[in-house]
Length: 210
Image 1 (cartoon, rainbow, N blue to C red):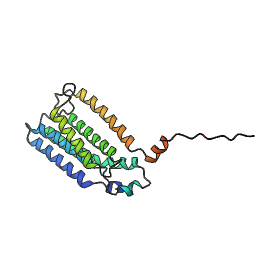
Image 2: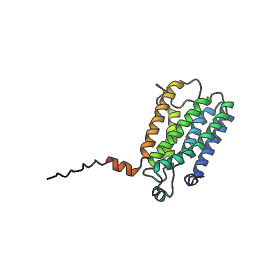
Image 3: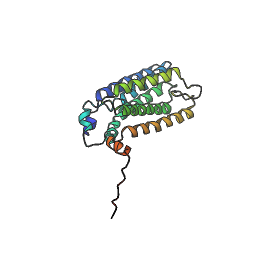
Image 4: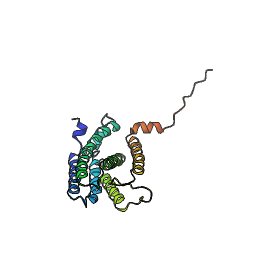
């Protein structure tokens, strides 16, 4: 295992993943009331993914010759843990609760994890451990969208049943995925490269021959 992965905050990632998986098991055991637990489970799983970029020894790691983008790409692999465990939990919940539509909820989980990693990547530019802030922001946003549904007049952002208009939801989350990719690409840009590219090029003065 690469050193970048060994240094990942596995405790926080596995803790949030376990809590989300337990909620999905509760949703499977309570078919009628299980729909209320799915958004909470998605919030916990996304919160677990938000911790993947935490780096206690940020000063030493940032000074290493390896680029920020490559280190972020390796660390982002850790986010597959909450996604894989959450997908299995949704599979179990979908078999016991008819209101949980497996393809749609797995896609929502992927979108929530992607947003969490993108927010954490953006905060990592200034914070050595952005996990807590990113997890709180993304988790509360997921719960708020599922509870209040502020965009329900146009689109359902956090649906769980097969009766929802998934076409509009897929379009919204596709845009979100593209934005997250752009945020991650901009946030992981090499600081030195960004600094030099922002400087105007000096024109070389040609010496006149007398």
